[in-house]
Length: 295
Image (cartoon, rainbow, N blue to C red; front, side, top):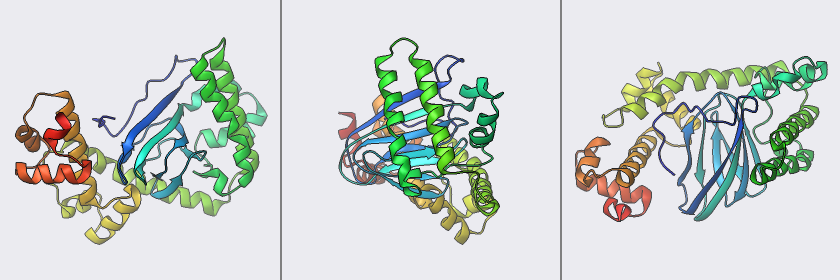
């Protein structure tokens, strides 16, 4: 896995008629707490189907445990990031699609009543639906069917995928009818916190070589340092310093693998003026030295 240059993602999906795509994610011999899904967001929905290993995914400030067979739904615009929990292989599939996939159903009154409110983010399904309604597990076979259709790519597989996803959302809408206003207000609070921090996270990505203090970051989002640190950890699952160090190490890994810069040059490009400290930091997060990673 390489480190993304932009926090905001623009996933390349299938042709415009069928705006969806599957991403098969695999991390061989992942270490505990290794970053397996980098912090990002997009205007598309994402359904994560866990296949191997165990992980923790943070979606809009809340952590969700995932083991093989678990399904996590990331709403449109939701900040999400993932970390492995144990040492070993990790594998999961991301089903990514845009709400416009179902635009031809907009004249269907049943669709408008039951499915559309979730597609336009007026309401949101629980991120981990089976934890709230055990019957939802029976719907997950539809996602396995979607994965199988994409792998086999039989005639009109796009249409089958589209219909299976719509049926999945329809069944979820049965299990979770429009929520009460109190839940809606809670979702709005999460959304406000998420939107407040997005510019800061983008700034961190584009200024990876700079020294950025907690005080500066707190002022950036108009919070005092104490509340900033609490909110940041809730949002990302890591402390601010830990997150910045992880960003630096991941960018360093990309440069080690994709460029001919020396280790000392790379250390400077990720904000570590002391090469010895950089080597120690890299080994702390990656389990080997920078020169070892390049070999």
